[in-house]
Amino acid sequence: MKVLYFDTTQDWIQVLVAEYKENTHLEILSEQTETTPKESSYKLVEYIRLGLEKAKIQKPDLIITPNGPGSFTGIRITVTTARDLAQLWKIPVFGVDSLEAYLVGIGGNRVDGETSLLCLDGKQGKYYTKFASKSGFSESFDMKPESIESKLKTNEWTPNNWYYTGNLPKFYPNTAIKIEATNLNLSSILQYSLNQYFKSETNKNDYLSLLPNYIRGTYVDHK
Image (cartoon, rainbow, N blue to C red; front, side, top):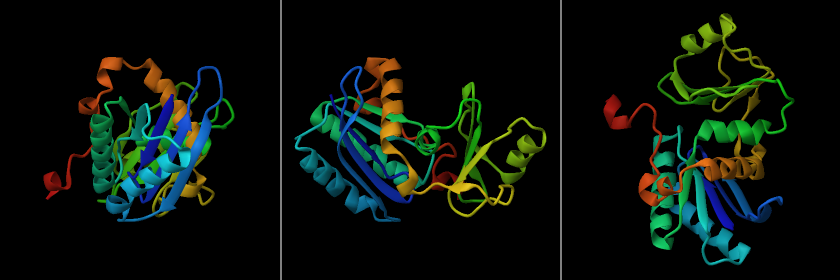
């Protein structure tokens, strides 16, 4: 099975084409990563074309993409492109939570029992937040700094690993790791996403089922 993965929900474009065979490792056929703030609207389709060309395939069998939370415009571009291509190619498409994907991509090899906190800069003085523990992932939250600090002070969240985007949050240690396009392991993200896809209901993976996860609605709602 040939799989196409792409993401523009943050300030980057990532496109990965891989071949999946049961009980074997993913074979990466092409991979592109570039930090491109505000350029994904006209670069994404070209990157996909180049990725498929390099992989020497005309179309994939499956599309996987993060569907948010993240940049409103970035989510819209990612989800709309995925839906359009899935409809055009008549193939399934599967959306994965962006924060979950990044925690897997940045800390997929973390020691058992370690915990991680990810705060994506959501602008408007809030963070898109997810906590990973031994038992799994929390929900993705849209939180104010004081709400996050409260969970930390009461030891509800006790992270060993701290990840963020944007500026370093004031409640983070200086040793925290900033997530950027170049330090995400796309193979780990894709393998994790495929595992989730195989657990999903097949009748919910058509282009109409892929929905954006804005969390806080749209910019129009907040004006």
